[in-house]
Image (cartoon, rainbow, N blue to C red):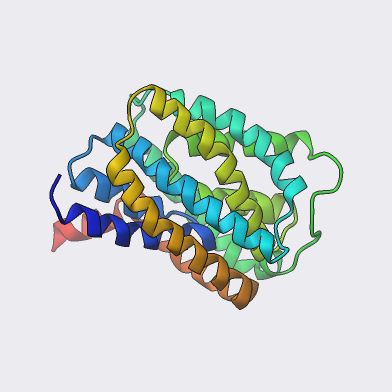
Length: 257
């Protein structure tokens, strides 16, 4: 592995930790880097989970200390996501990746429109925590998100935020807190599947995790101190860029140039 892989891994980890904590799609930075430095795509997918796990430990702890993490709601919605993540991590990778990326990109564009056109749904909470048991529809939504998160991770934070804000009624700050808690839960189960299949490169994954933990700490501090308005603004940028990347727009422009 080339020497420059390690400083790049720390930098990518920091950016991923910050972006994942504030919004999501940080793996769109780390996964291409891991593949660029020579890891097979399957191993890169597994190795990436080390940084994801540790950055969410830091982020969840930071949110908990500031009193914005709804532990009960996180556990109730995290259970179906964990079950889904185990299935997702075991799904065969013979799916049409190009089609999958385009569909996800299209869904993100739809979500971007909702964020822009219905800002109140993202800025004002209808509740501070999940009351009672979640509905069957909400359980199925988080199971499906868990399947996707276990399969590839990249962009799962955006979908979790959508489910937590539009479905469960959180504002963006509390939704972010619950999001990192849920990702922490299902990343443990997904990582175990990749470890069992010998698809984790521990050295570079641990180096990347160092940067990601610091990025997560900065991201949690930003989300809490700046509030929902600034998080929404950053979310619009991240979702827009992620959607364009997933749909191959940047690659098409590069080819034209």
